[in-house]
Image (tube, rainbow, N blue to C red; front, side, top):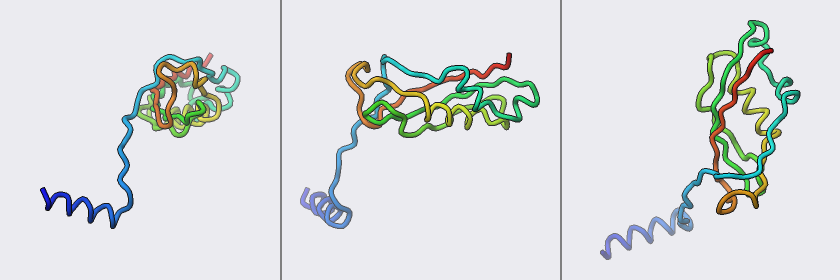
Length: 122
């Protein structure tokens, strides 16, 4: 046991303070603001418009405690190569937010939510 404590102490001294990791939570519920159709039109990928294609993107976004997006990771986009993932990410980072008080159990820095957005040409 003395050996383990010695290793931990040496690690603390050379690496700084040790912080307990707070588990990431998925956001449940909430009053959401999403981009409207006109706002999304501005982000429609040019290559997809030229070829008359719709698409789909799946994002995993993390949030600041104030309800704005901190970052989004593109998990999937179909069809590939048309830019639906980047377009969705750019629009969502700009327009999507949630009222923090409306989230079940409150909103913490780093909480995340999965989004699926379908792009359709009319």
